[in-house]
Image: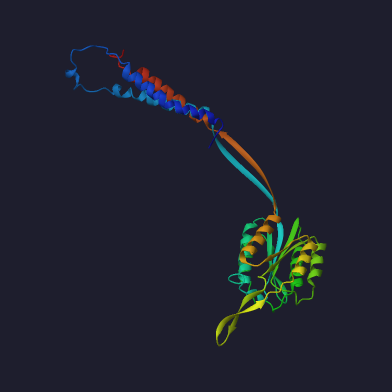
Length: 332
């Protein structure tokens, strides 16, 4: 419900003044029709319904005033229809699943942290087709770009170490993602590539893969994940159980920067969970889908109902004052 002329609602503040005036008229302007020396003998006379109807007059006038004021304010029902058209982005998230992703400089470890933050990112990109790619010594697509984000989230949960042989084939990770995007007709195509190490496997050099992406107009956002210096890495000893040893963190940042520059993307280094979250938030800001909205608003006036009710109460008040509550004998 909305009001076309809400300024008329201020007139409702005059209603208490109207009621006060009517009661003042009733109590202060009554004149006796017949004078008696004593009214004691009249005290037990039965009452008349007209004595009660007189109170209905100000009530009916008040209701008429309220409804007529509301009619002047023009109440309307607002029916809004929104048509949205979106031009989404095709996104491949390529995640390193080499054994070094078990390091716990990001809690609970790098791989779990990467999956949780990627999941939050996916839930925000409702109009984009998103796919998941993983790589270690080899690379393969877990799920191709799709709008079925429930499927993407479910498949992301299954990502774990040991799905392929250990190693770090960054070039293969990029190339596999390119293969899933090259035939896409989306206006914008991007790869988010996350790794914690240096390229040491695969048949395709990372720079060559970057040049392939640039030739196809695919932007690559590269991420190095891991603290600087050393990181605690869990080792399961058959005798003493799990223990931790500090391992050196080696990320080929120069190579990741070059890939990003070649494709028009950016490189970030995430040394903790908060920085990883900020990286995905920055990508979310940089890669916004175009959404067009056309809003149609249909107004339906409801003032005739209020106007009719006000006129009915006004007529009843008039009839009550002039006929029903008027005494045929003693009315002045």
